[in-house]
Image (cartoon, rainbow, N blue to C red; front, side):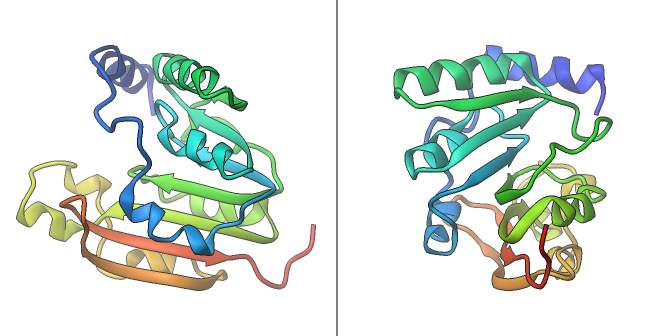
Length: 191
């Protein structure tokens, strides 16, 4: 990402959170596959809708995002909910990946393909990766996000190579996008 991306997201969040404060319904459908304790990392989590939900579930949560404005809103929301989350301002495309081990890494509506091997390296021995990302079929109904931020058919499963896939689907979601949804677990690795 760049200074320009940071400024874009700061502007977006100054005008209000486009995603709201509630976690994704698609992610909630997979809650039974996610750990309820341990360390969680919310990648590019914006204003903290998922980070706060994960903290409510009992996880120790780090929210990593490029936007100081988004992180400020997340801190305020966490304070109001009397929850603790760590907010880390970071350019995930330029800086070192946050050090694990992580028991859960989630990525919702953020795609930077080179992160996938780094995520696997930082997952705990039985750590879980949860990803929600639109696919190219999304363009059939929506002009955004642009194609470079969309997954090809079955690409997400390939990006998670080496992990045990617990759930994988590509379909039109309850949120109106054509999403790829993956929940996968680290296997056979000890830290």
